[in-house]
Amino acid sequence: IEQTAYQNDKLAMLGKISAAIAHEIRNPLTAIRGFIQLLRPHLVQLGRDEYARIILTEIDRANDIIYEFLNSSKPSAPQKVVVSVSSLLKEVVLLTESEGLMKGCEINLRLPDEVMKISVDVKQIKQVLLNIIKNAMDAIEEVEGDHAGIIDIGAHLDGKFVNISIQDNGNGMDKALLAKLFDPFFTTKEKGTGLGLSVSYRIIKNHRGNISVDSMKGSGTVFLITLPLA
Ligand code: ADP
Image (cartoon, rainbow, N blue to C red):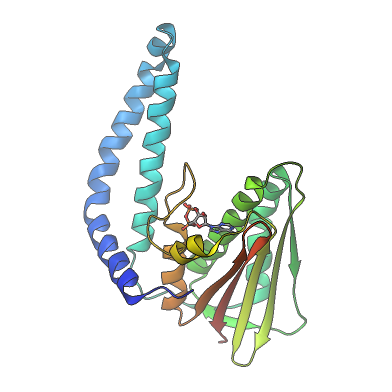
């Protein structure tokens, strides 16, 4: 599934607007959050703790959106360094393993013996991988019943490129959902921002790479990230 030029423009525009106003919205939100917390004991006395809980949740959601906005509006030129794909993937797995365990997902990393070096903005590529793994965990949680979640991560050389694959056995997506996957703000989650994948797409494109998805409703999803070798 390719993101269209129109979607890219839309995202770039959103990024610019957000950079200008995010700061101005964040400050009042921080103040509101602080005062609601001070009021909380009074609300509890009134039997209205639920109100405080909702206000705090919604403020946090707004903050998440602003945070992702800011990320998508950062200068597009990546700060590149040469790293090995294996070490990058090992680090990302280390960061996600404990959350995976808590959510009942096993994360398997399969790496070839070849050394694969890429020239990337490590922070940005880590963000992409974390977004995709986090989505995989969410998709696994969506499956009803006692489901043994598995996330398989792998990498292999393909000419002058490396293909990184992230496969889950989560709830999967139908064609209609797949078509909207990379749209900014498209989410099926109650607490989602719908920005994770559109931002990821932009990051990979800025690295002259590609990202594609294959999915089947009810059986799972595989994301494929292609990046040029250093
Ligand atoms: P968010 O995670 O905040 O919803 P994303 O842009 O990361 O935003 O994802 C958009 C939507 O794509 C998700 O809400 C979900 O419906 C769908 N999605 C993404 N990854 C997967 C996956 N691995 N399995 C099933 N659905 C997915």
